[in-house]
Image (cartoon, rainbow, N blue to C red; front, side, top):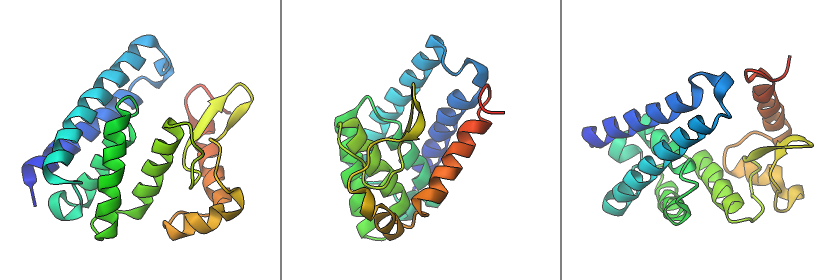
Length: 175
């Protein structure tokens, strides 16, 4: 196990979450958006170097918690889409070897597809619009729950209820 890489991943993921969760009433402020972008860009560039050198930082290399941290950084690399696609390919390989969580692969695949303007496969990516809150467009909705089960995800109706509950509990929203 690479202890230094593990510690770096955990530190970067903690910062990612700290910038997103501190003072939530100012979540939509321009300053906050710039902080997200700055943290996300730095993390994406760093993770890209890691993936090019080591491949996906999976469970064997950094442990499960830090592997989840790597996924979080990849998930938030939206402005570095080429790198995000490389992360997806590397994560796919790690899942095939049994070295990463297939649930994380489903989320990242959906994120990459949505960022490319394509329908998602697993229904993990939500958006808020003028008309409400819900999943981004989904490819073959009739086969969705089967695909979700293959990736270890709960049925869509359960996930949808969870996501809507999260939105309702967000500061300044819901009841």
